[in-house]
Image 1: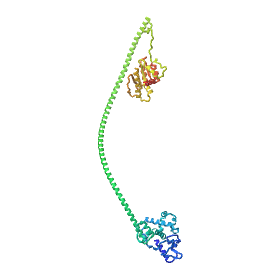
Image 2: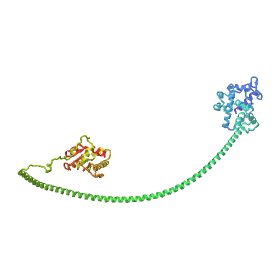
Image 3: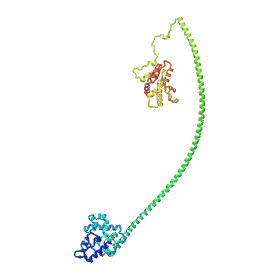
Image 4: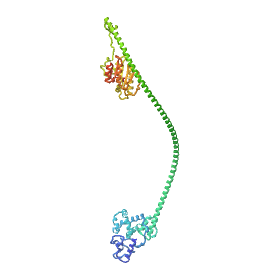
Length: 504
């Protein structure tokens, strides 16, 4: 080691009586001028006895007492190295700046923990290569741990001390056989670590065994539960399979029934197609017969008209003959024409027959239902109603069917109360066929033919009535009102009937 070489050079300097310190190249410590070495190993009076007293600033113990050939066979472990660095950092903090190796002087003001962390490499290098710095650390160790150092010189390891601390102290103090002490302490530390690891391993093995037993019990419980679930699933699967077979049988039966139904439907379609074909043929024959019948009817009508014309001519001629004979007789007898009857000669007040034109609506509104009541009170009165004209005034939000039902229900009440004849006319131009309506006593319901509107049907109904019969037409259509008025009927607005129906 370099420290051993330095010690040998120092001994040669002392024995030769030379006051010159070792050269800067061979010195492990301090600045290049070798001031620390001179201060430690030489004095102004001459050479210093290596076994005699030393400078108070120099190392305490003899530096040359170590065997130069003692070395470690392997590097220090990390734990021992950290302890060595920690002790070196603490020692460097209490030494004067001039006694520190040059590499450690930038870290002199650091706290020991920070110095051990940031200057770990320079500290380790200084301990290994600078014998003087190491000896100063060893002096501090001797003062702090005298029992351990005595045990080193006795050749035994302290049983109660931490082997890592023992190795670090032996490395710094370096008694005789220190490499063996360091290695033995390292081995003891590893053995202690292995013992602790074995103890922890035993606890871990016991814990793992307990966990394995618990897992085994849980696995057994899971197996039992899974077996029960499998049995239940098998039972459910058997039930589902039976249900599936039943559904398949039902499906096959349904398919067979569907095929039979399809066959029957096809047969029915075939029969229907034949029936339709026969009906078409029969319809064509009926139409042909109808055409022949219509032609025969037209011929018969022409014949009747011709015969009627001849009879009318004869009747007219007869009437003219009788009329001329009566006229001649009246002239011959000098009779004056008169329409007077014997009862007409009796002096009395004679009533005037009322008619629809005699009822005036003075002092009443144009839709006062009292006017309609007076008209319906006339003998043999007949009321013709434009149905949709009334319903769209009274019930515009209802459907056509609901409008018809509601109107006819109210008309039935009026017919029952007044005894008048009521005919309700609806426009049937948009209907594809007859529409079912409720039957009410005293109410006649008519629909116009396709191509004909309800107004035309109303005019035909008015024209069919004899002159002089009280006839009331309910419609707000001005054209209808004007037409029926010319025919002798009395038109009233739809609002009048609506108010009468609302009155109940």
